[in-house]
Length: 292
Image (cartoon, rainbow, N blue to C red; front, side, top):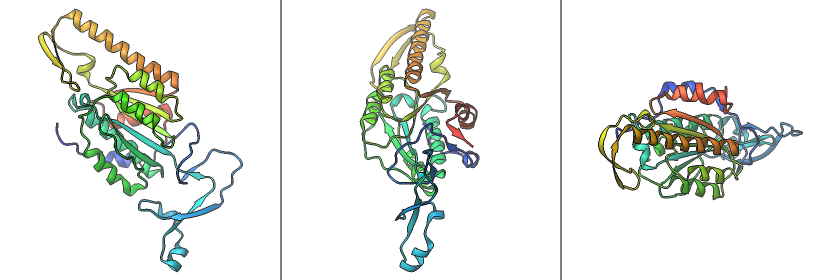
């Protein structure tokens, strides 16, 4: 698989004016730049907090900096940050396709993360299907380079996507917007989505598939190898076998979409060859997830 080259700069420039549009308010660890929709709260000074790299310098108190040589930020009562969780499917099946589904997923995750960081939100990257590690939020435009490096070193080598989703649902993390970017090729995914629906996250499922998976052009005697388990299956690709495959795939995709509908999640099926601009600005934007 060729090395991922990151999100194109021209796309980042296009995304500058977009912000996430949550349907409800979410509690966050610290205050941020997002105006709260709660009523009866005026715009007035609330408190100070220590400056951390990546914070917006517009809120820096320059008088304190000049007097004490210490950096503090002013926070306000009606400002809060939105937690944005990027759930990247790192299962081995994501390596399939040309370009690979995994590269497309990384570009989408990087684009969504950039929107969050520029908009003053807290971005939490999660690698699903690989060894769990501590998840720390990224904040501020300058943190985009860290997100890009995090995405660059990820590899599609894991398995048990549904287990990883349930682990995320059970984690003690602030609720917010959660973007699941996956091929969804896990039989237990519909049940995992329903478990996730019990949390207060606003879920957006971006299912990325290749044309070959949707319409395989196979014939003759074949030996198929499961990318995640390594198990082999020998088949004869007749018209009947291919029709059975299409029917089972359709039933699985319908089950995923129905689970999303039941829990109030947005669902969008995309192709690995679609441009990120087409996915984000022509497909995701009309759903009301983005504003700009």
